[in-house]
Amino acid sequence: MPIYVESVTQPSPQDRTDLAKIYADAPDWLLTPHASAEALIDTALADATLIAGRFNDRLLGAALLEKFADRWRLSHICVRKVTRGRGVARRLLDEARRLATEAGQPLHLAAPLDHLESQAMAARCQLPLERI
Image 1 (cartoon, rainbow, N blue to C red):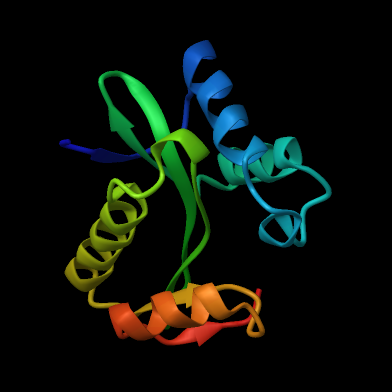
Image 2: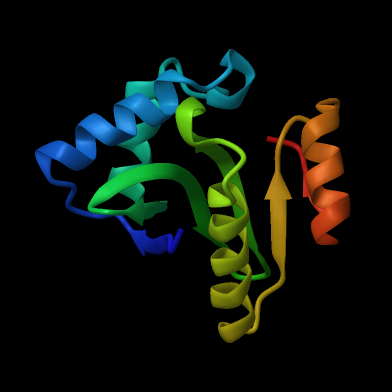
């Protein structure tokens, strides 16, 4: 399943629907510090930090990729429940790592420090974990 990762800056109406479906499946802790999925999406679009994985013209997963002077930070990774387990999150992470490396920046994963799944992902990918 070829997942194409792209920066989302001007989403189509279908992209907006897909993003809403992606983050509708998100657990509450993943939306922090945003009040809702809609607020997260709107902020990410305004800040130009939203990246997404596309397959067959549909967005299946998304994340925020923030670019700081000393590091890049990947956070709020979410994949639609019906698509989980097919490598979409891994593709987002791999592409973020590739872009950060090209820019000469280390990539950090941001998540709640007490979240075991995020700790495991950071360890598997050998990425530093930052608190959201």
